[in-house]
Image (cartoon, rainbow, N blue to C red; front, side, top):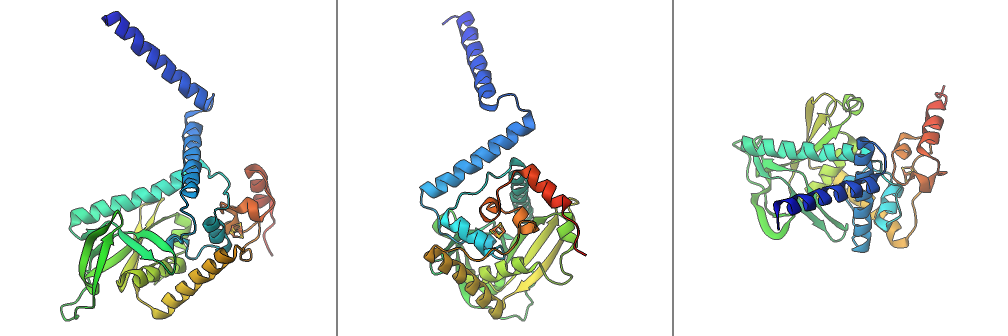
Length: 292
Ligand code: SF4
């Protein structure tokens, strides 16, 4: 093939590539293109989960959420399309986890970046955040019971085997300034504490921490969390309550009304409340007079 023919061919490929992009995105700007791509990709992944029968699992991050929303999700009810901007916010949270795990690894304190979490009774199949060496262990502290933990990507690969008190489990949370400033003084947000209690129950680890980052300023703070039998029982009974609703294919009562912030950001808002457009909703929300 001559050089002129080769150039012509590559030019044709370029023109057809550009045409494809124009057909796919129309005349929207680059930001809307990104958002549209993310929303479509997310919806396709959701559909894939449903097609592969990956419904009915309880995700530890669902602890503390509206039970009705968790049941909707477990039963595969359709969500409203998730705006690209929200998906970018979630992506930011994932990047924070990865960044911290890299740093912990370089510091020499990381045991594993994540850990397999499984429990048939509670229908949990997921992964935790990082496991680190227990640098808080005192010399006179006796070794606790031996535990074995597995890699979430390879169920037969052991990533830790040893006394439970030689390691800590860390849950990373990247939160807005407003929520960061509202954190309690001496303990993490209740739902994050409950999430760690569930991890303790599932892994045998008995101590951990919630490590917060203020996503607007990059300030950080952490709270230690210790195993608490009462909270473990509470979290197990909350999950079982959700599973009972799922088995009966019934929905729990709504936990909020259309104006509550929890419903505002809920993916199932249009199933619980009158479906309205984002613009109409914002208007209603911001025009609502303050309670006296
Ligand atoms: S819209 Fe509100 S009540 Fe309905 S599932 Fe979501 S958070 Fe719960």
